[in-house]
Length: 509
Image (cartoon, rainbow, N blue to C red):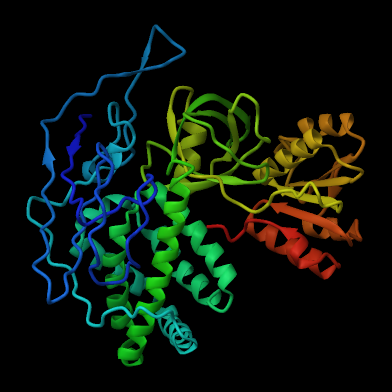
């Protein structure tokens, strides 16, 4: 399959690249044009975005048309571990969407997501803001209107978000290349993010933390400062359409104020993160080992230092499904050799997980987002530890056990409950038993929900753990299927564990 490389002409006067060490944005990205940001660093392609001009300004510069080179046949990628047989070039699973999923040799992974406008015509003019964004922060009345709006839109959220993305891709087709070909999951995420921001509006610290993580995470998508203005305009237009009579000038002004604050917090977070880390890491697969039915252990070597803590996770993208990112927890504590290990189970409808289990092999290159997650140990806290892991959720629990072993238990006892349906699914039990044999402070309890066998407890993981209590004073760490984590968190809280001592990353997505 031939590939295409795209040469991008930048509109440096319109954009600042978020997440590549660029200077901070010169103004809050509302929905009107501001001062022209400085030029991006040389040699880095940028996405041209048409920013809607105010009436007093000259016409906006039209987005350039991407120049395409003649198709070039890719050279095979050699396997670094084989000097005899070269590896074939990786092709995306969507073979007939070259503008969306092009990836192959020679793209250096940044140009695999290069801009390619739809067709040869300039994009349609952007939506013009009806009300200029206010400089003042949102008021309590604004927050009241935001929540009322979301309550009206929630029953038709699927249609509202579909309309929102349709507006973006129609008026700003150059932004389409940032998104996956399949948009179903992405639509759900947008409304969940809006709801989360609205719920956290009365808690500035929580809202800032949430938007900081969101802004840092968006760097890996290639999000630019210049994207926030057109996205905001399309969001306001979509809300206005589906709020009907509940939408008025006061409501629109409230959304513009809130959106300006949200966008600025995300941009600031991206710019701050750009000072210390790249937006993504390339990672070569160095080992692929089967751990059981539909479960594989992948070990990768990142192209540069990757700092993380045991218990955290990352987002991972494969070359077969470009721009489709999924969460995977680290299965070990940080290692001296810098390698990263993941446990992956191929889900029935899991594009990324199935590709990692059934297609990935040594020599393939993946992309990693920054580390994230709050399920980390405080070694200065003397509290006893309780860890629950279900299925491949045992991976971050095993990493936490390794970290305790390295730092020392300091007189604390660590109880691990490892849940599965049947004995064959307890793939990590031998390794945990070996750690238990070497460390007297560690106790490992396998729990089976569909099978009775000697040496294992029987029942639902959450029920068994509560029965084995009490757990007063314990710090609990939970990882596994969402339903299991919810049940266990609620059961532990009811049994006396303080809610702030129950740690999980269930709502991370």
